[in-house]
Amino acid sequence: MNIIQVVDQNMGGEAGFAEFKTALEQGANTFGLATGSTPVTIYEQLTHSALDFSQKTSINLDEYVGLSPENPQSYHYFMQKHLFDAKPFRESFVPNGLAEDGDAEVKRYDEIIAEHPIDLQLLGLGKNGHIGFNEPGTPFDEGTHRVTLTQSTIDANARFFEDEADVPRYAYSMGIASIMKAKHIVLVAYGEAKADAVAAMIEGPVTEDVPASALQNHDNVTVIVDAAAASKLSTQAQITPFSASVE
Image 1 (cartoon, rainbow, N blue to C red):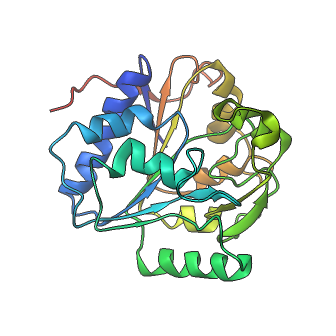
Image 2 (image 1 turned 60 degrees about the vertical axis):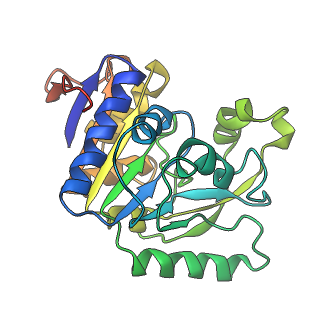
């Protein structure tokens, strides 16, 4: 893994932007996108840039079951607000949280991923090591699936809702097997609360108990962290400070 350390989340946005810019310059066509607070500064950099995604495809990691695209807490809505309104893609795919047939939705999304191989996959990292909504115990060979969210994930996402009881208990998530097929994976994590997960992901055993540890088996992973998130890595970890500026 290529570990890049940034001063703060704003610099992390610059570092993430640089990865997207390089991917475009290298001919990337399909971008796997993530939601939550972590990628927001990356999307801010993208929306204020001259980069053109109008002929590109995006595929989002996940969506809550039961939320319509118009719901402000849905990931459809999040992506429109933070990226797509300013930087539209030719095609943008997000799981359908209102799908009547869950099995059919899972199959549909796997077919989309198969038809559009992902060049760059953006990821956040959960405190319990989850990526997407792939919770601890998720098989590494899992494709898109319907997930029962753990209480720790519900608690972490409760800040986005008026009440914890409003947080959906289920979601559709791209599987670890699908994530691992991406040509380049960029994972971003900030803060001391993520330090244990970062250390387990990079230096711990590869185990389904830490879903992100699967990334040790991928040959092109960039990890963007601040000092707090990197604080529990060993002194042997090869960490490169980020110093480039956005053009």
